[in-house]
Length: 472
Figure 1 (cartoon, rainbow, N blue to C red):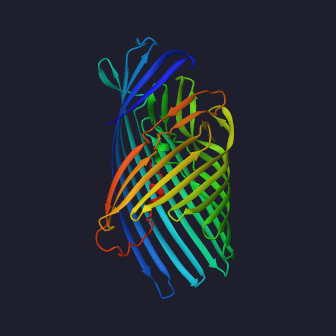
Figure 2 (figure 1 turned 30 degrees about the vertical axis):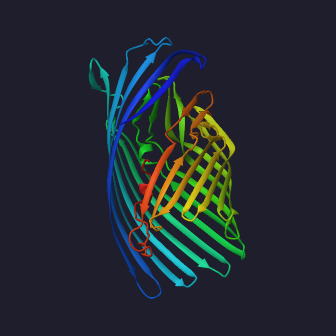
Figure 3 (figure 1 turned 90 degrees about the vertical axis):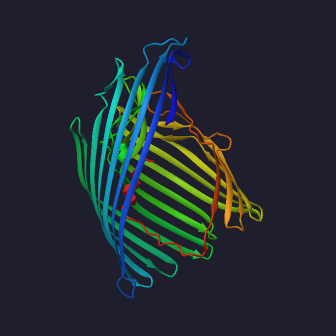
């Protein structure tokens, strides 16, 4: 059982507090899943023609329980009203089935053609049983209790052509998808059905200028479908005035992405990118005037535009000290004509810097020190403040180097926290969130048998895209 405490000050301003709402949230979650994969692979002839097939089935079961105790107090500590109690019990099941067939045809030593087909079927069943404590008994909360069933079928055909010239490699791809989906809020009989076709081309060109210089350009169009959790319209309260709600009307987002990369001496990397996302799925915090509350949900914003540059520079400071530095500078902008009745246009240039240091203290004894910094960032309706934290670890080889003992501390100074305020027109709030990011770990590993055992063949299954839409 996990416990979370939330405190909300209520008044005309942050300096004139009339009352305080304290919410204790006791949460318990259980999760189990199983997956089956049937794989077939055949080399058709000596030219390298290959045929492979996968049949996959996965089932996920989870059950979330939460009980909230709301206590509204005057500044002197006396109760404004009786203590309120709510609880949720929400079992959930997700079934994923997929079939795919892939074909590879090496036309010659430098040219290859690939093609494939795939169909997937997903069914999610979420049953929220909400109750409130009234007249000394738990009673069904008809405002929130509901059942949501979501079915989705995606059929795809794809092909890829690659050609290697003396100093140039080219890759062209095309994927066609046909999607059918149906979301049913059973209790209210609110049904959302969609059926659509999509085309996704990709182009990659890589050029070797000399031994130390390579450049490349690429273009790709992709689709990102909403997570199953984001589509679930149930309401989950953080406290009486703050809650989370899914959005069954979410549409997929489509991104056109352009990139150019440069590599120097096979170790210094620069990537410059430009992308435009239509119907961008974005987490937002909005006001509910009727409840006098704030709620978090996901919405499709009209466009998200990102211009970015990413630079990676490794440095060997000393024989015993190596360093890797990564700097990502980007301008992210959002625009939509109507979000909860308001036009939204936000954007900001930000940067992220990560530094990894590895030290050889002596034979068999190593250490690592990593630093992370993120500048202020505007994301949709949120203005996030800067964030910085440091991780540290030290490792010792033991037992004739077959074993190792490692001690690590994440967020050494306990500075990894989130502070944000509103970027939504006409709405003002400040939020502070601090999770348990300072963790101490002591790990022991030992390698049995021979170290040169050949690893198993790595391959993807047919349900990776669908599994990626599960909530974390």
